[in-house]
Image 1 (cartoon, rainbow, N blue to C red):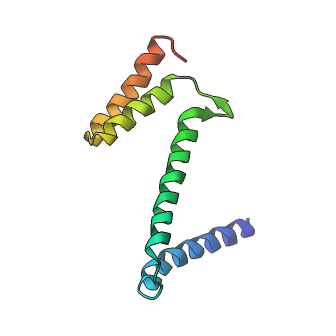
Image 2 (image 1 turned 45 degrees about the horizontal axis):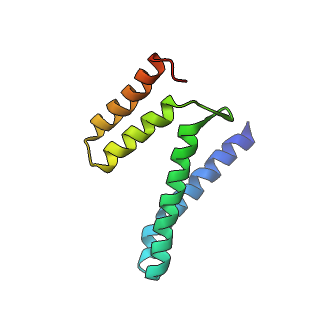
Length: 104
């Protein structure tokens, strides 16, 4: 039990140190525009991979077609700058209707 407490405290301190390092080192470390662009692309790629895995896989199996279709509808509406509430309701509604129709 003590090791768990120590691990949680160390992770908390490490997280705080990383969050503090950003604003502290921003003025001292100069990043080239090319590296900044690569970092932005990396963030987009990682986020896209997270969305894809969450939308397509559950318990190491394909989730069916209803959930990915709902995510696609939500993504298109978000891309078209629809209000967030509309995006969520449309995505959930699409998945729900498809499941009611028997689409896995």
